[in-house]
Length: 282
Image (cartoon, rainbow, N blue to C red):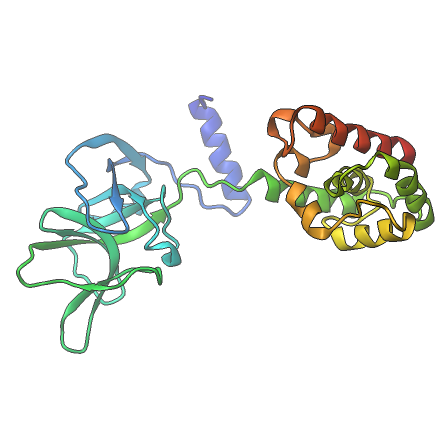
């Protein structure tokens, strides 16, 4: 969505009033589209994407540019595949600096450190990878990483929904149905359950209604054991957890066959059990 200049100025002013420190991106910096490896050195290439605008405050008098990252050898330094790093060239490199290093024409991203003998090393930030020395016979150039840029930071839908459900549970009115009534509901729906995993439909409906706590599989299994002793297909924590994938981690009203752990007739069997449970709960 385009933002008009006056709207942008108003937004900046509001941010300042609320204690933020907004900066206008009005200065250019080169962005290299070819990803640089966090693993083995690779060729970044010489193709530069259209310049990006950055706040002048963040730019240095020294040459700077931005490059994307791939691989996982720097993950413990907070640099992951898909991130970008801003690097500054023609500056002195110190022990502990994260550097973009060109070795015989190829690039890699590592931490720089000299050992007690003065031997320079490049050190990965992931225990899966080994540090390696820089040799005198190699042609080496370095630029220091000055900033890590998270590209399109994203959290999983499942983790977001879990927090939302917890918040809803905290602010919602207490569920009036008691343990004895809940066990009566379980007893009435039990004949519909023809496999241990199908108890997940009952659990999900009761979790939606706040009769059982979020992810309290153990408590639910104990409730079923009390309500229907001797059921041929008793629930287990493992089987319930295995069904908590796709749309099944959402409220029953949001279940979708194309994003469920079961499809076809089996999906509708789960849905029917969940809907029956909700009806009995009232």
